[in-house]
Structures are given as structure tokens and as C-alpha cells.
Length: 163
Image (cartoon, rainbow, N blue to C red; front, side, top):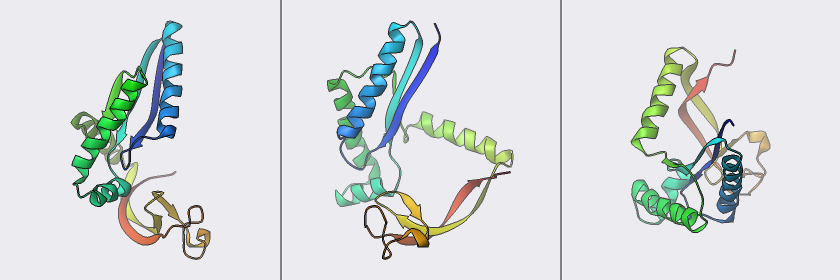
């Protein structure tokens, strides 16, 4: 008998849950149930990521502020997990105070240890894919995979020291 921790991705709430969300969560549920039957101490986590430009854009398109949009979408995810009889032990939201505090504490410790630093990042960004591209990767100035527009942005970010 051992311990088994499993998590799904924390899903973006830019739209309603779809088959891919259900598939991933059902697979995690199957694994967690197997380990429980085998006598393992299991913790199964799922949840939602309520930050990002896609979420902000989806909220704006619906005429809602991002938190109101996220609150509505989260219910749809949770309802689907109930209908599928998913046996998760916890459902975390990135807007939950308990999540925010832990993340802030971890990042502060890493920052205080000198392992991360703040600097500017410049690149071509696909809001749809939440991905940066180099100029040489673009096809006719667009995302090479989706063909969608990209925008050049410069933003302050934190980086890990690598070496």
C-alpha cells in the first residue's frame, strides 16, 4: 500500500467543457479508482485556471467581468464531473485564496533565494493558443499552426535562472 497523487490539467474557463476535458478527467478518474482498489492512499485533484488572455477575451465577448465569467464556467465543469461520477478529492480554482496564497509563498521563496529575476520578454504572441512564436516560425506573419493573427508584445515577466 502506497500513496498515489493524480491531477488533471487545470482547465481554462474560456469556454464550456468539451470532449477533451471529459476524456482527460475520466482517464484520471479510472487511475485513481484503480489505485484505491489496490489499497493506495489516493489524492485526485482537478480544477480550473481562471487567468489568461483567452479567459479575459471570452468574458469581454460575453459582456462580463472575468470573475463573473469564470464563476459561470466553473459550474459547468463541476456539473459535468458530477454527471460523469468523477471521484476527485478536490477541485481547485486559480482564483481561490488558498491557491493564490500557496503560489505567492512558493514564488516569494524562490525569488528570495535568487532563483528568479524580472526582465522584459519580447515576441510574437498568439492569444488563441497562448503561445509565443519567433519571427522565423511565422508563416506570412501568422501563427504557423492555426493561421491566426499574432501580435508583437513586450511585457515584464519573471524568469528562472538557468545555471
